[in-house]
Image 1 (cartoon, each protein chain N blue to C red):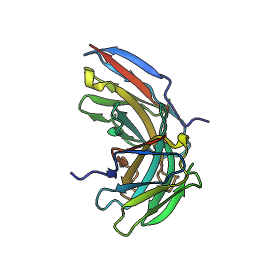
Image 2: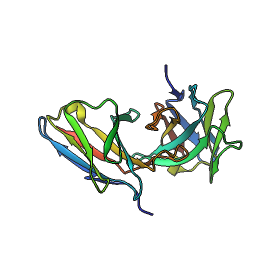
Image 3: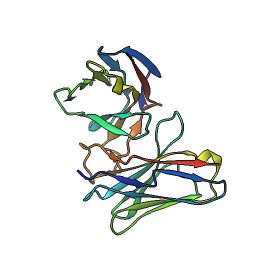
Length: 114
Length: 116
């Protein structure tokens, strides 16, 4: 079965550079969530989209932006990268309004800022 | 206040033994869902099991079962006959129906190490 696809799997950037992470949700899932997981921490919610519109915002820095496109894939754009942005970034997708459903996670993008 | 509490930062368990990972939650929402995820060292987040607040029976998925005690607000994960491959971080999470975005609220996780 198709799963959530994230690319790239690994990314190394230097401080002050920009990075773009991509997420392709499961077909017919119209809700996408982005999470950031620092080393040894639980995932922190960044932002979510429903039907290509931002639906909720968590602890996303102003240096980050995200959008969902017409094909429902989503991109997380990160600018002026800092060492503290090094983390695992997860994308998850869900069918809308289905509480009785887990969020399906991608394999994550491991970002290292040096 | 913490909405999801996992009191065991780490656990060592002998292979083939059963293991219980604790999770307590706090919500005033009558309708919610509880989830357990496994995160191996490779980093991916793997869904294990789900329990709905109105489910009468405890959820089971293969070697995983969820000991749901609603009055105590606990949702412990039980892994029977543990295997070396079960070594991983385990996260308990919750979704509340009052949250229109159905965000997952996470516990801090439990690092489980299975000893041969």
